[in-house]
Structures are given as structure tokens and as C-alpha cells.
Image (cartoon, rainbow, N blue to C red; front, side, top):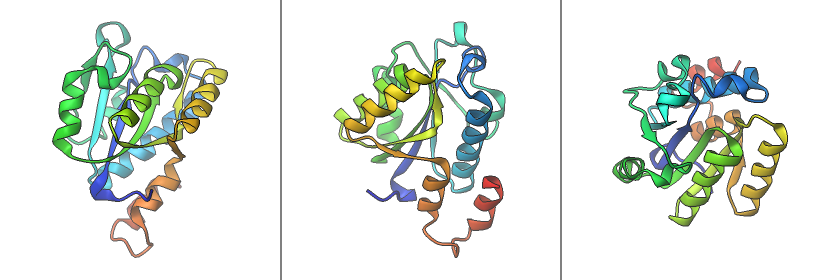
Length: 180
């Protein structure tokens, strides 16, 4: 499957102020999340953000929220985003079949969301460099399990340049500047 801007949506899962500090490799994780969120803003591709029980885990990291156009996170209590009706409604409203997934934790909410999206017929692309768990072993297990279920693994640069297709794209220089 090749990514196309008109068919793609980004799902940012539960990157929240009280959960993020305990993630493995959080510095690199935040750098990559900022790149993908900024890149999708430049390309004007929709982003759906979720928050798991905000009262306990806090809001989405402000540096991410501030880079999402019309930021309105979807509150959820189910681990899978698909367990929240308003998430499914938003996904249907957007009418995109390619779902790029990033966020935390890889072995819980990210894993269950990817599985449920596959069951609903979506093409699911997981950006391996934009997911994490508290323990690296849990992230590794999730990536292996999802790949076996036909989730396509990708990375920030790979996805952004695939969406551009060519260095002649009018947004190429802007995207290149956030990658550096």
C-alpha cells in the first residue's frame, strides 16, 4: 500500500502529561512525535488525538497539542480508540482508509487500536519510531505481534517522504526543515 495524502489520517494515542514521563526513550519519542504532527499540519492531513481518562493521566502534551490544527482530543476509557463511539464517528466523518498510528502505550492502547482498525477494514500503518511503552520489551512485543497481523511498520521520515512523493512537491522544503 502506498500512502496518499487524500486517504490518510493520523491517530495520536494518549500522549499525556502524566503518562509520558515514564515512557522508554522519551526524548527521541517526543522529537519524532513533533516531526510527524508538524508534518501533517504542513500537509494539511487530519489528526485525531485521544486522551485516556484525562482526569488521571492529564492532557495531551502541550507541545503536541499546540501543533494540531483545531485540537479537540477525544476522551476515552476503553484501551482501544475504537471502543469510543465519538472516535469511530470522527473516523467515519473524515472518510480516510489509511490510518497512521502513533502514541502510547504500544502494547496496550496502540496495540488494541491497531487490531480493531484492521478488523474494521482500515489500512493500518504504525510508525515504529513514534510509539513507546514503559518497558522496551513491551514495545518490541507489540511491534512483532502487529506486524504478524499485517500492520505495516513505517517511520516518520519514511511516511512523510512517501506522502510527498517527489522533491518537486510544494511542501518539500517545509517538510525537509522539520526532519533535520
